[in-house]
Image (cartoon, rainbow, N blue to C red):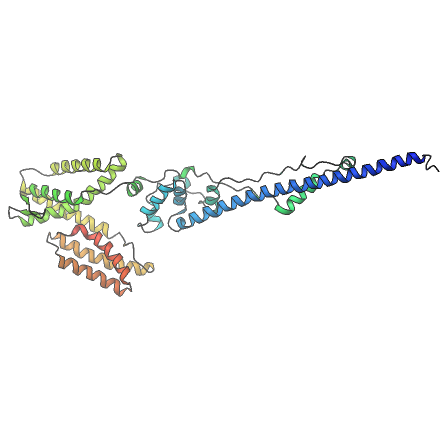
Length: 398
C-alpha cells in the first residue's frame, strides 16, 4: 500500500535517512557537550588561577607594608617599597632609633608635587605595588562546534559555554586603578644618606687626645705622653689643660659629623674622609689662633667653649629621650626631669672644672630615681640610662 503516493521501498529509504540523521545529530550534540565541558573547564581554571595569583600578590604586599605603615608616613613607605630589599631593610634598621613617623620623614626629600592633592591611600599603594591585573572580556566564539540543527535554526552554541563559565566565575572584575610611583624613587635626602650609609670616624679617642694637645699648645702649654697612654702637663697649667680637653671633646662630634658627611657628599672612603676632615680642622684652628699669642688664644678658647656649651644646651633641650613610656603628658614630665640632670652636668662643665666619677655616678643615681618613681622596671631603667650615658659621654673629663 502506498503512502502519499510513495512506495514502500521509498518510505523504507526515507526512514533510514531519518534514522541516520538522528544518530548523526546525537553524535554532534554529544561532541558539542564535550567541547563545552572542556572549554568551560579550561576557561574557568584560567580565570580563577589569574584571580588567585593576584589575590595572593595583594596579600603578600599587604603583609609586607603593614609593619612599615606603623613606623613611617605612607609617602615614605612608598619610597621604601621602591628600594631594593637589602637597601630597604638597612634604611628601616638605621631609622629604628628615630622616634616618630614625622621625625623619620625628615630623612626623605619633600614631595612638593603632592601638596594640595589627595594623599596616597593604603589601597592605592598596595594596588600599585603588585603586578598589573586586568580581566579581558572572554571570547566564546568558535570554541564550540555547531550541529546541523544549529545551522538549520541559526542557533549559537557558544551561549551555552558563556552561561556555564559565568555561572562558575561570576562577572568580570573591574580594572584596578594604579598610581604611578616613579616620583617615589631615590627620595632619601642628604641627611638620610648620611644617617644610613656613612660610618662613624674610627679614631675618635685618638683624634680627641691629639686635638686636646694641639689646643693646649695654642694656650702655651706642653703635654707629654705617660706610660698609660694619657698626657700630663709639664707647664703646671692644669686649668688650661682642662679647658683644652673640654673644647677637644666638644669639637669631636663636629669632626665625626664631617667624616660622615664627606663619605656621602664627596663619596670618600672612611679613611679618606678622616684624613680630609683632620686637615680641614687643623687649618681652621691655625686660622683662629696665633702661634705666639697665648693670652689671646686662651681667652678665645674659653669663649668658644662657653659658646659651644650654650648651643649644646639649647639643642639638647629640644631633643626628647627616645625610650620613655606612657602618654604624652607623662613622657614630657620625665623628659624634662632628665634634661634637668643633663643641665647640672653642663653647668659643672661651664666652670671648666673636673667632672669626677663621684659626681657622674650621683647623676646616674638621680636618673634611676626619676625612672623608679615613674614605675620603670630594671630593664627599662637600664635602656634609658644607656641613652643618658651616651648623651653626656663627651662632657666627662676622665
